[in-house]
Picture (spheres, rainbow, N blue to C red):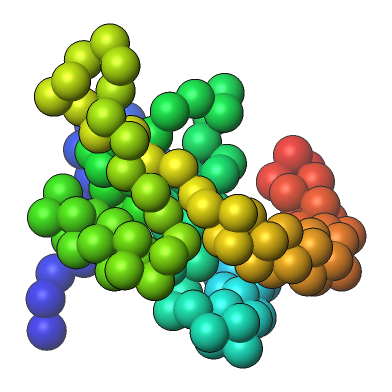
Length: 147
């Protein structure tokens, strides 16, 4: 059996109460529930969960600015070469287009096709609806953190 992880800090950690464990457990449960919902919705739409995540990452990029493959890799927390493969598959499916950056011809910018925009709008509406269902439970958990 392995040892528990060592803490980085020399300061003593605060006591963890049973209610803290319960709150963390409930939070992870709600996350898993939402992710399972998301996976089913994506598959029902004919996408893999990773493809859906990529479309959302491109469309929802902070500031609505241009997205590079490197940005996508960071947002999905995957390696650059995995993001390239994902973009290749999305391109073959007619969901993503690569554009050369007008200011820096070495950079490639990603944008969704109209078809991808339509699919993503449908999926996002369902996700927002599901999020509104679990929001009260999440808020209650987060409010308990301040107690």
